[in-house]
Length: 231
Image (tube, rainbow, N blue to C red; front, side):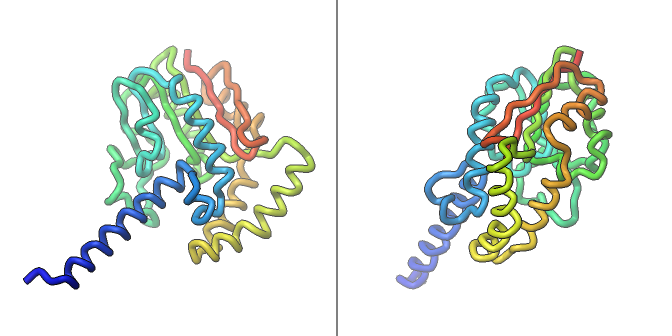
């Protein structure tokens, strides 16, 4: 029989699931709750605002590389949206709405398939970024546009020193308190520092065959959105 305890347990499970879903959304679209749960709140908020400003520039048939849970899906007003993500034993995609799993090097679509390609926080985790850039160029139609959002280099010297001190000394500790996982935050900081700066990434994008590559700094260069065209 259905008892008061059963009802309370169901309500508790429902509330926990709703809070977990809200927390996941806040990781990519930071709000007030994110101030308490997201050690990278201000950086993530800058990223979200940057995507919000540029999403309308994606047209037609869109490919989202490294889509994960598709946290920005509803920001894009496109004819068709396809999300792909890498086959990674360390990251289980079974509960994510990924349309296609790929190997991180070869995009399983024919040439000239997409009008726009978007990626967010992908290339710092890719072992062969030049190959992936060439693949993105291949699947874009002539006249198609590529948008790439990555953590980057802070441009103001004084702010850079403060941000480095915060990233290496404070952020992993906050991550330990909030999530119990300082190592992931330490890995993130180190991988960002190894990643090319804004101009170097532009050069890599151009080397893959793109033209008119440019970037817009977000949050003083903590992150940047690069864009380029295929001709």
